[in-house]
Image 1 (tube, rainbow, N blue to C red):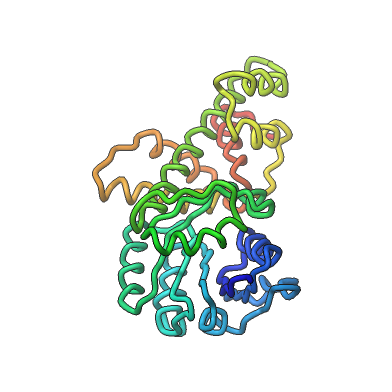
Image 2 (tube, helix red, strand yellow; image 1 turned 45 degrees about the horizontal axis):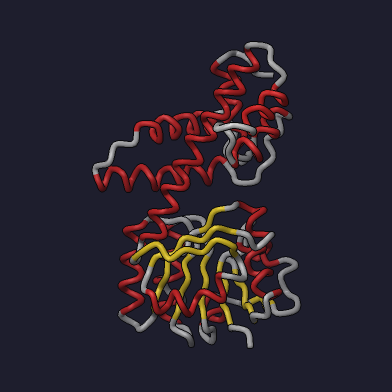
Length: 294
């Protein structure tokens, strides 16, 4: 028998995740503050809920997939939210990418009401969400993780319990800084190759076959070569994640010079109107630096 789930946050990732939960046999009530996001979400195993409380009150599990820390705090702790409404199963899976310290605070406040919270941010982007192949890094206690595992398995392929509350968010920050720095390296290789007059498709093919190969080289370098800025994971969202990384590094006194440089390049991209474009639009920064815009 499936699990009753209240799913809050029907964005580009959340809508696929909710649908995959329904396909796996779970009963999913979905809600989003934006009514237009709920279009097409009613169907087998899916119900559109009128409010957060309506979605989660009778649920075995409440899941949140939201843009940033303030939205997660509002849904979980604010008026009409999970803390106030409660959940039948007493389990929250917070799958947004948010502050690790705020995560620990929210988990402690929910625990005071008998609600266990896991932080379970994801990696894999919209394609991973649609294909139920996300990598999910989970922080929290072992018993709620065991209860949550069948639900997580409907959305992801690599699911790892990485430690106590907040650990999932910290692992996600590590993931995002590696992705940003790697993408910066891909941009620089293509910029150098272009200036030398190389065939960039052949350059990428060779690099993919050796130690320079990576997810970014595989998936985003072709879009750079084609000069396709179409959004998958947006520049603005990556900047939000880099802000979280830099805040955590400052709190812990950890110097991250390469992350700082990547952050500045992403800020340059947003300053030139690239915020709503995909991550690969970082290559346009190198166009501007080398006077190759066109």
